[in-house]
Image (cartoon, rainbow, N blue to C red):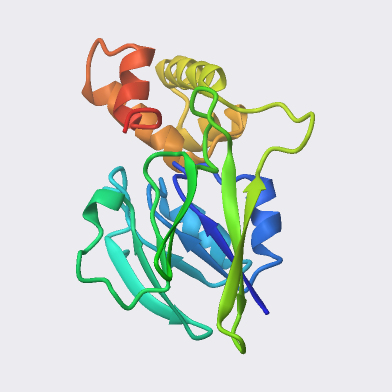
Length: 221
């Protein structure tokens, strides 16, 4: 039996719950909208990572492909971020992984599983924060899928309201002359996310918090 973690749409945010699940698995598959090299680097400290780019992944991860076809433990995987971009000639895949919608979905078409693990990054409206774990039985060539809720019972979710506050605080600290590292530490945010906020703010005079959130593409598909 082999456990494989499947995640997507982290948008620069790597939850401790996701890392804990990854440590129980033999590989992590990331279906795009990574949000920064540091997400991949941190995952790789725990387990091998197979990853593709999403529509927000423009900088710092040029070596990561837009689609990926590979074999793990006798099963053929194909990954692409947006389901609309799946190749029509992918007929040898056992499992097709995609993301983009932030909504968990399992669908079987013949012998092929189409799996969207949902988003385990920043909260988007009231959508669940999810990932998946696939258990592969190499000997019998069968598999099972478990949906994982990444928010512990009773835990406070970091969602749109908290992101709004983060952007406001980053702007305030930037105006005060603080550097990115200091701002990130002060606000408990990843440096790459803070850098993106600062870049948008500095290159778009007069932009407000809502405008920055829209350009970060965290909630807009």
